[in-house]
Length: 75
Image (cartoon, rainbow, N blue to C red; front, side):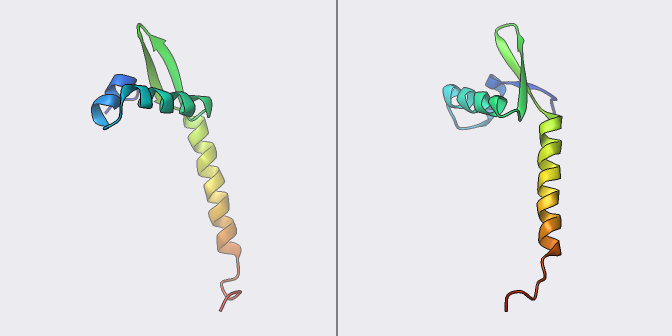
């Protein structure tokens, strides 16, 4: 429903502690999968469209490669 969220929104939805969720969000941000901007006392997170496009392309290439494999190679 929202294009962005803050950690509290996620804490309210998942059975994990705020500290655990914050650590996961930090790692996702470090990996470039999400972006975060400071809004007052909170960090507002959103998905990184570029990162997910790269992942989509990567997996499409893998699937394309698998489809090229001759299915008769293994009995």
